[in-house]
Length: 159
Image (tube, rainbow, N blue to C red; front, side):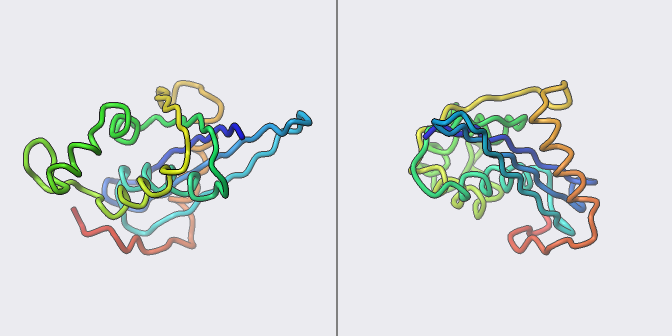
């Protein structure tokens, strides 16, 4: 099963109110295209946490192993996988190359578990450059951040 997953995160202030937007697209063998969108806002969070949440929600929505073309404008998320940052963090006990604690470990661990069953091709796209699905995810994320039903980001520690 081939799936396209697009995600984006937003924070109004960093930290501040934030949100994520995610779009999943699957084309069935019949040719029918199926899409699902996800978004949620949080009262106090960071842009990086919302970038991670957008990816997590998309991967967690997949109920079987898939080939996933994952698109994000977050180099933080993409390079963690393509440049093997995660392997180094784990090898160093969740410390970065500067021997400082990795931020957002709660979400990184959740994302690692969510991507594990899938075959993934990671694609970085330039944000705010007219990429239709990235623009849609940005709209979902910013609308969620500006919404009224904001959740508490339990993992955010005021970093």
